[in-house]
Length: 178
Image (tube, rainbow, N blue to C red; front, side):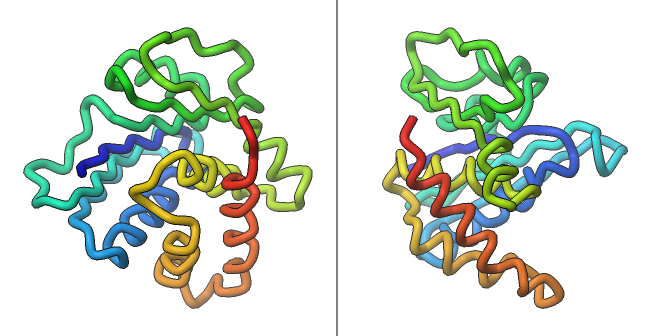
């Protein structure tokens, strides 16, 4: 089993954090992982994406050119990577920020209004984690419990007060029916 995931959005949307969480979940599960962050010169508002590979076998390259799974946090990211996603893959996108319907017949499409859910639930900056929770619900190479355990590794000591909010966001995304 090898899954290549690309998470993309603007800087400040938590793209790198979501990828790091996914990579740690794989590590804690005893899998081979790679995590390759990429972002523009601006820390907030610039482009950001994160390539994550989770596998049962050694990983030859950390670069994800044609993801099995795309998580797009904004329209420019969806536009850029929509046609790069492999046939038979999955595309998750924040339908709060991307209004038009995604048109591809050879992939599974999962719109989730993550930003609206985050705002409604008082989790303003956690749309990324809601998106990740929804992706976990549709795949068996990661688990919700494993992701919650990985949160304890990726949430810094300084932000431990946010651990429960992140766990809540994971659960909200996992339980969302799309």
